[in-house]
Amino acid sequence: MTTLTLQTNRIAQYWALTKPRVTQLAVFCAVIGMFLSTPDLPDWHKVVFATVGIWLLAGAAFAVNCLVEREIDSRMARTARRPMARGEITVTQTLMFSGVIGGIGMWILHELVNPLTMWLTLATFVGYAIIYTIILKPSTPQNIVIGGLSGAMPPALGWAAIANDVPMQAWILVLIIFIWTPPHFWALAMYRRDDYARSGLPMLPITHGLKFTQFHILLYTIALLATTMLPFAVGMSGLIYLASAVVLGLIFLWYAWQIYRRYTDLLARKTFTFSIIYLSLLFAALLVDHYFLFKVL
Image (cartoon, rainbow, N blue to C red; front, side):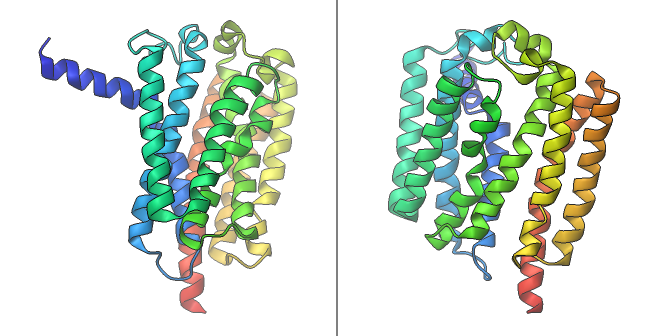
């Protein structure tokens, strides 16, 4: 194996530590928050610097998550190929990598965006990497509910980056992701329940059974549909978003109802996949509506 190939493989391993697909969704929601924070187009310099800074700190948090859960990951088919689970990267290397990219991200946010965004993003890092990963996830089946706040923060981070403020509208976006997280993640946990049983983590389908989890997915999806009406109710969006939220919410509710009535692993997998598409389309519709609304006004 050539030196170039070894270096490429090493870069790929460090890249995998940041959980890029999860990071992309989080950063996407943060960018939406940036654009929603102003009726005009935001300063593109701040958009770029904030995006990079938030991405780096999110990647640092995920690297710590991989470090803490390396033994758990090694017992699960879904995560067994992660670099830490395979022993391809050492604990020291992971800590140094997380510290370096996290430190750079904090500097970028503090110096090139604003201190508020840096502190909020750092709090999110602590919430995910320490409170959720180390304390909540291994100790309670409500881990994804309680710890979901850190994963729901990206829109507030993006809003703070441009407006240097986090008003009610930003917290509504956080609330939407907070309510979305349990049905999204529990759908995954149900069809991966054998994996989670081997991991030893107290996930809801393991501790309380499938039927209990199915019912709670249905309840949270109903709550999500109601919560997504708030942007229209408070005047931060118009009919484009409202129609999109209703249609997308009813599709999600149909999936949740089908899971409740006649569960199959295939249906849970499809629900998990749709939940990601759902959130992306919902926030995209909010953005389109935002600029259409201000253009009309």
